[in-house]
Image (cartoon, rainbow, N blue to C red; front, side, top):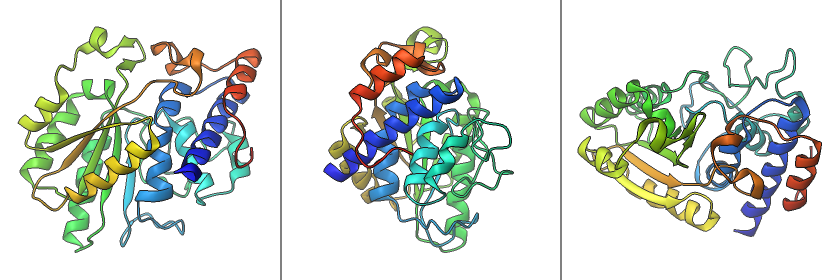
Length: 277
């Protein structure tokens, strides 16, 4: 797993540098989900960088918590969807790398606009049903924030997925316990998510989202649970801001950028591994 860990460290460098350069963006959740997206795109998912919007004949991914574009764009670029140098354009005028992913920019790898939270589960369920109708045996993966589950549309889609036996979907919930206004317990206590998904008739599994070995094993295990007549959800425990010690303190780093001093401290904790953009 050393190669994947090196990629993840470099992705974290990309995240803090991208957000710092424009003094805008969401580093906290991006840093927390780095192992997940790195493992997904570089190891687990069967995907094609010769991008086609319909995704027929390959596994596809939907980012529902669309504010964590720093990690998403870095992983897409470094896995070959578009030039790594384009990361320099993050959140700048006329860029394809908007603050939230958009489809009208025609950025390879992006299949849905996800600026508004709570919609990704519905899209992922629909895409999984479409794959089944097309006799396409590949899987649909999706990522959602735990705070995002405050949105009621999620639960309609979760109910629909079980009703329609969408068993080619693996949804992952980033359970970092934080959202923009505070902890999830303070803002809207989610209670026992495992019990909730089981009650909605999903297959539920859990993993440590900041341990690369555990993430790869957890995703591979989830793949073995597909095809059993039920959708699969992974409850992924992460730390917001993981990898940069002063960003791991709570919800504050959800959507603020590091200053020059803080960038230097962050980069000192993230040694360059495969080359900065």
